[in-house]
Amino acid sequence: MLSNSLIELDRAHWVHPVASYRGHEKAGVRVLRSAKGATVTDATGRQLIDGFAGLWCVNAGYGHDSIVEAAANQMRELPYATGYFGLGSEPAIRLAAALAERAPGDLDHVYFTLGGSDAIDSTVRFIRYYQQARGKPQKDQFISIEQGYHGSSTVGAGLTALPVFHAGFGVPYDWQHKIPSHYTYRNPAGSEPAAVIAASLAALRAKVDALGGPERVAAFYCEPIQGSGGVLVPPPGWIKAMRDLCRELDILFVADEVITGFGRTGPLFACEDEGIIPDLMTTAKGLTAGYVPMGAVLMSSNVYNVIADGAGAATIGHGYTYSAHPVSAAVGLEVLRLYEGGLLDNGRKAGRRLMEGLRSLADHPLVGEVRGRGMLAAVELVIDKARKTPLPAASLPAQRIFDRAWNNGLIIRAFGNGVLGFAPPLCCTEAEIDAIVERTRATLDETLADPDVR
Ligand code: PMP
Image (cartoon, rainbow, N blue to C red; front, top):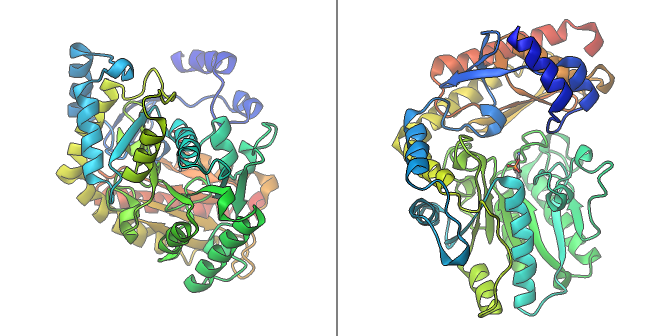
């Protein structure tokens, strides 16, 4: 009863993020009510394993009392403090220091945001300021990658390279450019790592040339693993090669770790997987494990000092009311304590089991490729393995697969024409990982039996 009235209220009033509004009105909302560990319970009492950690953010898992306590204590003590006027709060200072201590290389300066999109926006503002401050205002062109996702704010959506974030919105802007993705499974250069890397390096060089040379290009953005584009894992050596080329060309290298940060791929930051140090790094999601909103931009000492010296005594006009919110910062500190107190270790173990389990699905007739690293994975479905033919778009395979998985007690992400995305909480037990794999197998079998999908 309650659920029905909620569905009506939702239909009438809530505009959902990234949705077909008419499609959603027709389908009706599914209301989630509670959660513990890796399991969520909906308003009808159905229990599901959350194989996607909310929106790849609840890395710590649900129901940690210590996180609730950290937030409640901070709310009692000091629920808000601005960072304007030279003010600050202890948790914000401590979290900035903790991140600087753990981040690669000299990423020592932290600017707090509310999430990933405004972290990306902030990098664009800082990078423009930086290039102006060093006397190179003509370096004002930005390059990102096809299939990349960098948020859905107006500026971020233009760096994003997924069509639904562009169509009808008047983006990308003319200073936002793309090069092809490494997408190994469908790369015209083939799937050999050396060929994929060479193609990406050549594409970046060619794009820079086409824009008038390095003196016109401000920055290059990439995700260590492309998330929303379908969990596209670059070959080993790819990110290091791109980072090195950016250094050679005097182009700032931005690693968008909004998904890959905080244990998702194994280490605290995915840049550690290949030992690279970006000039700027964006994080969000796992920073507070989704319990409260927060993002952060980490910048190198060089970027920070050029901006600071360039401004001199002048005010640098970039800030939000909720930058470095003390409640979010207190949550961030507690979440970090939990990660380092065992969750990262458990995530690495669970990640190995997840990848092994998903790879066991590779011989299923619908599975074209299984890819991933740690607790971030995808299974790409095809109807013809030799030709790599995607599932027919007209049958809305993603929605059907999501619904089937839901009915099998599993929440996963289903992208586009049938790429299944997995990003379970790092707290998953072996039994939960095995259940994710088995429920996926059942979902694939049902999809195979569906005449509309073939
Ligand atoms: N960058 C990446 C790589 C992301 O995956 C996301 C969100 N999925 C964002 C930026 C934007 O973050 P938010 O949704 O918190 O604004």
